[in-house]
Structure formats: structure tokens, C-alpha cells
Length: 425
Ligand code: AMP
Ligand code: GLY
Image 1 (tube, rainbow, N blue to C red):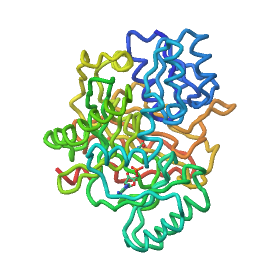
Image 2: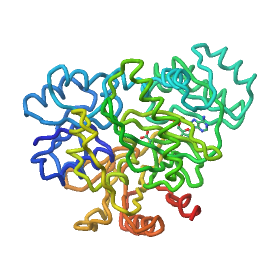
Image 3: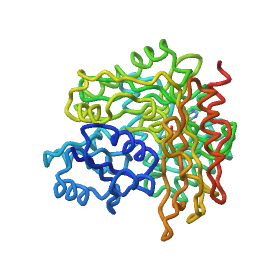
Image 4: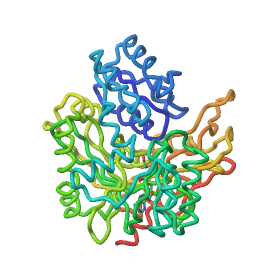
């Protein structure tokens, strides 16, 4: 079977890596891919959100399954376009992707179907938003309505910080028209977890739990990023909590999707805050998390091709996911300056030391190859060093030991990925 993976990050490298282990997969293409992906798949120079070119390519190559990583092509309707042409695709359609594409829509959906979330108000007027901030006081969370690559959310400890954030979103238009509307919501205190499920329209199947680290610096300091590291499982998600998440969040979502006549086939990612043992939804994504996909897929024993195909065909009731009884941890190595302006073109060394290891894999995100055949940095998040271990301590040791071998100028990474889980033990 021929597979096309759409995207170019660590998540897509993890898809390609896992799909390449399937006995059913004969050839993998990736559009546009990166230098690490190029070792396992043929990279095609088509942008991830160029729906027409992707469809033409899939038809021309006779691709059996297309797998979409990032949100942009989903909100642009790639799934609708492929299905219209009778082509199999793993990824939600445009109407389902609104749960991620508009935070205002997601909040209204949650309110309508009784899904626990922070109290909020949405605004299109800067002045009314500013007035509300002054009225409500701090802390407060300010969110751009549309897609902003995980950077459109500001947790403001003071009213001044909140108003600054409002300026960045609504006046400076740092995220373009994603900032035409804002949400101002109550700041929840607790522990975060990422909870993903596969949905095929009828059946819902939870994936292993995970925990992301959104802030750039240790101890959750500094600005939000796309994610600086993750581990799976997340010990905060106990069996009881998982039952509670399924009952108080996922069941109402399934009812809501049915009532709104939204056919949801793909991944639903709920970003949760666990406050006094109760889960609240901070956000929805309609795709695998990045970096969460890396540790989760490293633990998956089932054939990813079969699982994705079953999701696309509405046969998830026949799937039984099998997981390695181990912990996996991914530490992201980022470029100097990220999540702001960052340096590019730095030569990366040390990546060949991991060949043949099955307990460590370095997933590439923003990398390319230069004319000398060396790997260079091209993105904010560059690599995701992902390791398995019998427990979180061992997995952490394995990941950080691997990082010692890797170098590029200005390389930054958090030193505390995994500590939250270790401190729980
Ligand atoms: P989101 O993209 O909505 O998940 O927000 C990004 C990050 O901002 C989350 O992972 C949290 O760390 C933080 N955040 C978002 N909403 C809230 C909230 N209501 N209370 C506290 N922190 C929040
Ligand atoms: N790591 C968070 C996300 O993928 O949105």
C-alpha cells in the first residue's frame, strides 16, 4: 500500500517511522517532510496546506491512504476534497475541524453540551474586551479565536499583562485575522494533561495519555510554545480519571457531534486542566498533538496503518489498541530565539550515534540537509529526542543521555521534562 503523510514536523516523522514498520505499507511519501523523514520516505515538494496539489499528487501516484498531520489543511477542507474524489484519508473534515479552528465555536459547543470548561466571554471589540479585563481583574487568560500555532494564548497574572496580550492579538494583529475575535477566560489552576481519542463517527477509542510542556523554560516559565516535551503515560490520568473524562467530556462530545450532524473521523485531542481531581477542557485539537504523538507512537504496538485505515473506514469497533508497558519521553531541542524569531542554518552533529537503537529515536522537525549532506536547522523546534524506559526515571535518563551526543549552535531544551511525573511517585 502507498501512503502519503502530509506535514513536516516531529509528529509526521513519528507517523512515517511507525507506518514504515507496517507489513502492509510498501512506499511512503511525505509532503513536504524534512531531512529526517527523507531517510524513510520520499519527500515531495508540496506545501502541507496546498490541497489541490496534494490531491493531484495522490491521484497521480495512486496513494491508498493519505494521513494528515497539521491543522491547516484540515481547516482548509483537505478531507472533504479527498472524500469527494473517493480517496481514503485519515483526518477530520472541515466542519469537524472548527472545534480547533475557532476557539469561540469550541467554547459555544462546550457550553451547549455541558462540557466542563473555564468560564469565558468572547469579544470582537477591543474596547469592550479591555473593559471586561478591568472589571474581572486578574489572573485571566486571553486567547486569539483562530489558529496561531499554539502561540495565541496568554496567561496573564496582572491586568497590565492581559491588556498587553489584547493589544498583541487585536491591535498588532500578531496572528492576522485569527485575532479578529478574542476569548477572555477564567484562569484555572491545576495539572495539565493531553487526552486523545480516535473517533470514526460511531466508535470512540482512547489513546494512551500524555502530558505536554508548553512553556519554553524549566518550571513552566516564559512564553507558550508549540510544546517543548512530552511523556506517556501521564500518571495524573488514573483509571478513575479516565472514566470521568470519558463520561463528563467525551460522551457529551459524541452527543453534540451527532446533534450538530458533524461527521467526525480522526483524532480528537482534549487539552485538559485537572483541578481538584476534576477534568476541564482548555482546548480541542482535531489532530495528534506534537510532541505528544512522538512518545505515544513509540509505545504503540498495534499496526498504525491498520488503525488509521479502520478510523477512515468507520471500523474502529474492530480495533484493539496494544501498548508497550513502558514509559516514553520526548525532549524537544529548539533553536535559539524560539518561540520568537530564531536562528536558522546551524549544522547539527551527533545524529548518527543512535542507529540501530530501538529504545531511542530522534524525530526531526525543523531540519534540512545542506550541500555537504549535513543536517542543518530550519525551524524553531528542531528535534524531538524520544526514549523508552521501564519507568519515567529511566526514560528520562535515556533521553537526556542521548541529548548529550547532539549539538548545534544555540541549541535549547528544557531540563525538567518528566520531573512532574517523577515527583508524583
Ligand atoms: P490552549 O492552546 O488553549 O491549550 O492554551 C495553551 C496553554 O495555555 C494551555 O496548555 C495552558 O497551559 C494555558 N491555558 C489555556 N487556557 C487556560 C486557562 N483557562 N487557565 C489556565 N491556563 C490556561
Ligand atoms: N502540543 C500541543 C499541540 O500539539 O497542540
